[in-house]
Image (cartoon, one colour):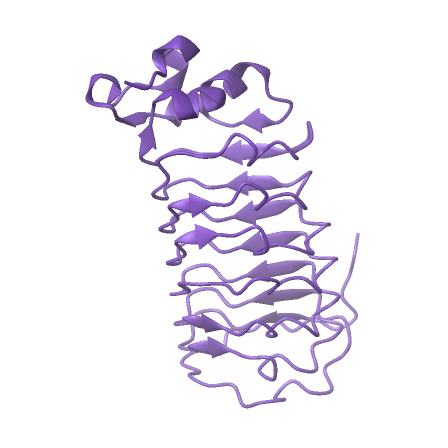
Length: 232
């Protein structure tokens, strides 16, 4: 079990701004919790100096902007929580230097799309939480580097997914897809088939329900046959 050499777990309420290089010199293995403040932006220099940080929690702030280089120096980070903020967009390659990251929580934000390069570099990731966003589009290779990850896409605005999107996942991976606006036509037939034969696990399959077409609205995937998923 990993034990940080120095453990800082404190909630610094009502912080609105972190000066550049404020953490310079804290290069040991630390855990830093700055949740429940009013920080609105993360830049490269905001977190400069945290090169040995093991855990960083910035939940429940007011973060809307994350610069592409914000996490460049956090090469030792294992746990990153950015949930319950106002993040609308992530630049491609934002996490590319975080090869040791195992847990990433981006739930309860305002993300609308995931590109092929959003999560490039996260080769050690075990858990990715994107639930309760506004995601409508996910590129087919978005999760290519997350072969053994648990991925939570619950309660977004997804209507369909490309058949390749989970093709890279191994048998240890789990996916959650409840609470989306699934259009149960022929383009999503593969997902119904995946409930029965995918190498990965789709958790809580009874929670996958059709929003459209009208004749299937409200019906659970597991109560339908693949042949019910047709295009008119």
